[in-house]
Length: 435
Image (cartoon, rainbow, N blue to C red; front, side, top):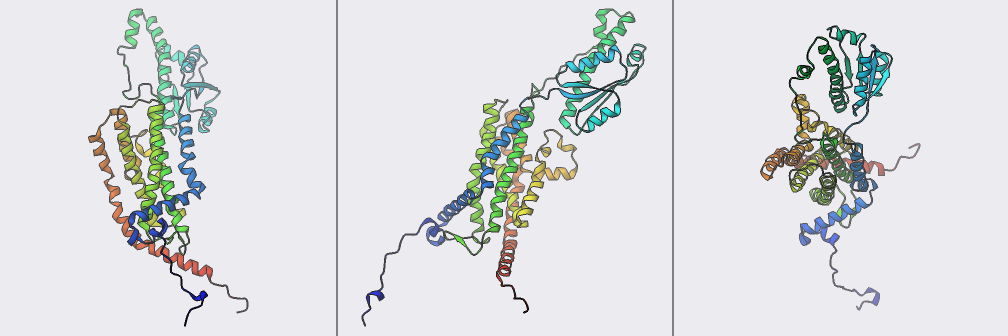
């Protein structure tokens, strides 16, 4: 029986598969096409996420410029110092003028010690200097009065700076009194200077001759900031996979967490690595090309060290994600882990003086490994052999990869199952009243 026109079968030629369709058929398109589709998927997700866009665009730029502006003075100036003058003599006023002449200190008068200590506790002043009663009389009569100097050690660098500058200013003022005393005893004037300072010393910083805080503090602070931003970028991208509808797909790519998990991770690394490396390169260019801070080595070596650090950061984030599989916990734990990065770099405090637990924690920090290469290249002009030896310290992060694979194999299916059960429970109709 002949078919009616409506029943006729039309056979058309098969249309070529698009990139996304090819990604769903790895046997015909291959792994490369699938990876390209996954990168495009990440780009679409990035465009739809304002917070992630901010993390890779204007937030790093604002953070870098703000931190540089905070230290742009180079050296702290006019730090408030409380002066408690219990002597009220010409000597105490002269010593106060010595402190005022120092550009680092700014004397502020207080009537008594308790009010000065209270001001230091409230961070209104950073140090307290107490001139004792009858200080001048005791000096001239051969006694040894005690000038009480206190500073807030919670502000580590400020406290050390004030301690040295206050001692320097008071020492110069007291030398004049000691000279008068020797003249009164009949010592020749030509001999007084020799007696007061028989040996003169000069201290010259080898790698920071102007004691500039920009070259000393800003690079490690920016490295710590960059590490924190890198962690947030990868953690947010991984956490996104937890909130996708597993029953849906994007251009043939399943949203299920366990489907193509490792190609998805690789696509994230391929997308965000160049972006984060641009940020790291901008930091180096800003510090050593635009600001022209002292630099003895090669920027290419630092870029290689930055890449190793970035991959180590992301291996840690991936390990924590696979272990916890919860957005809030992943962000909280990663933030707590990476927040003290600057303190653990050993720039302002010797690491060998840290407790053993802090030293172990420091070894987990990729920035602690990177800063050794940074200092050696910037200050000592280290070459490839030295930097290569320092990069070998990242071997522990390579050892994380098999562990991450095993945990992902065991734990990710459990998360998918729990999400499916939760979706079924939410979709189940509620029983009617009275049933």
